[in-house]
Image (cartoon, rainbow, N blue to C red; front, side):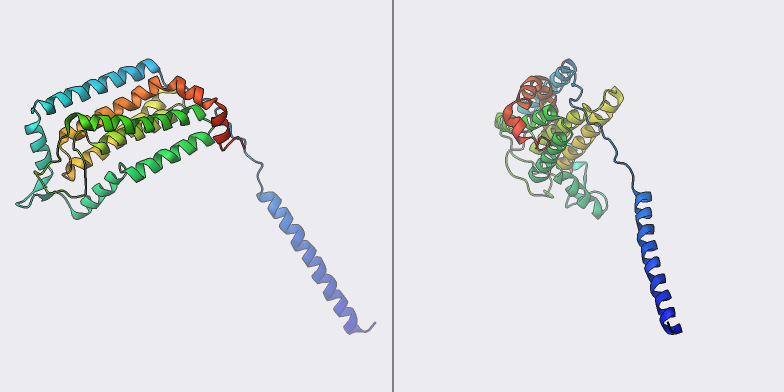
Length: 275
């Protein structure tokens, strides 16, 4: 064997050993980085919302709605509505107060109560509840939102109030003014979602926090309609009271029908977590 041949074989052997070492080292690194799969325990059933408390909340909210409706029909909200609309405006042209970016922020916030976004949020919440195996809560949420469409349509025909013309409108809006559909449906969707996800915790403080956030968010959406000049303050007040009232009333009255529907064969077939 010539020196050149020996050197070539040694170099080839070295490269081969280095290759095996790299492969072996790569496997060791992969094993070191691997972690055992985590076990996540999902609740087979959520905690129930107290029906008695839900009925009390619904009764108080619907009483407020009835009072506001009577005040509007009796013509006793004129000063409240007029001052509420003008409070956010300034100058001869009644332009909105605050920096320019505030207008875009308010429009973004009001869009959360629009038909498209709020229904997308509701559909996403129903899907999330199904994947969390909270089928009863998913059915209850769907029934609450669907029922709200009927309830709102009936309430809109009570007064038939035209929209305000006191200040320029800063967004497009159509239909009757009382009660505010934005305020009503935002309260329904976001409070109903909060009630559904609140069943994940047995701690009352957690439940109240979740529901409180939904209340604040829906109130903020309702307020944007006054700021934008497309609703009287009494419109959004009544709308929010009615929407919140329906969310709590449905949580109390539709629990059993939702539970029965959740156990049906049709719900079993539609549940994405079963297949």
